Image (cartoon, rainbow, N blue to C red; front, side):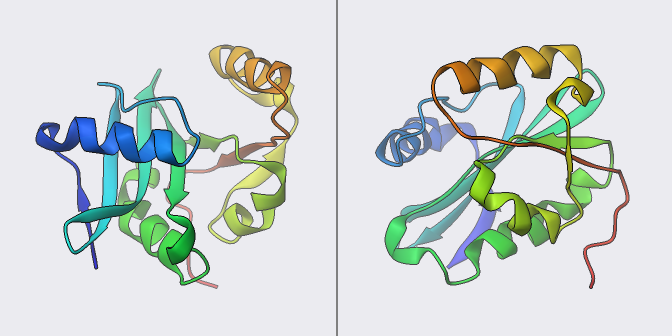
Length: 144
């Protein structure tokens, strides 16, 4: 298994992987996507969106049969240099707060998000997602 930055040639396959995970926000041109593969199959992905001088961690999904094996932590370690460049935000499902907390994200009130992210957050809430708002300062150390 390896983690690499995705290139344009696999855009369709990555978007298909996301749909299979129940995530319908495809890979946009404002995002860098990273994938984990095994035997040429995408088994996980995470995206980092750059917008308004901040980074937004988005769409971390691991195929079910590979969950619980440390792949999420591997992704975070792989993208740490990107997260260290700017202030970063994420809006994970509420049960994932402790996981993201281990890598330096802290829970914040939704109204502490930048305006455009408040709108995105409210949209997720309106669709029934139970999410939390989190922020990570740049150059945050991941070591415990």
